[in-house]
Length: 230
Ligand SMILES: C[S@@+](CC[C@H](N)C(=O)[O-])C[C@H]1O[C@@H](n2cnc3c(N)ncnc32)[C@H](O)[C@@H]1O
Image (cartoon, rainbow, N blue to C red; front, side, top):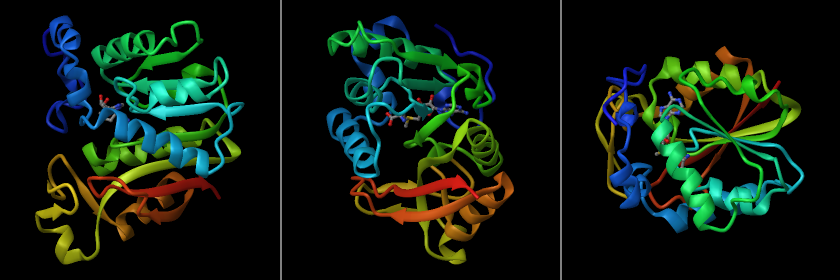
């Protein structure tokens, strides 16, 4: 499939659709960052530790090809997993991953949106998660996403999201090599980093409270933030 016109052009590479051949070669795993098993398991274990129950409605924002999704679907009750992504080919690859994991009989909700529109699911979410999504987005898109997720979050729901974090204004305006992982981040191009003052500002704009969790053993130094309704 050719490139599709998409709001992410110039922001990140996820406007490019993977061909069937690439999906057959499992290239959708690399397209979401690789470390398939490790990062899938890390996501599930983290949310379980934070209190995710099989009965909860979970929104996986920027779910991609279901690196975390396959693990979440396995854990959650039927019809409790909701994944949303801008890239249809990754969602298609995710359906194949579910079938390969023997989960084809579980009801799963996947949707394509270029404006974080999770209201199309008509569900209130106990928990939402965005792993390695905000690391690929500039500020205005993140604020839009926070605001949209807030509108579908249950009163006591939590939205967990990862960022590359820097510790000072000086670092913010520099290129930084994140350790571990050796990923080079900056304030002006993908992969993006932010400092806590800017993340707090984004939360304020969206009307959410921010709890900084920080380290959650991510192998590439992405830090965890938790947003909730004030
Ligand atoms: C690094 S991948 C992570 C996928 C998944 N969360 C995981 O952990 O495997 C980033 C994902 O964000 C999605 N994405 C990028 N920009 C997006 C946007 N504006 N709206 C929704 N999804 C987006 C990409 O298509 C891709 O699937």
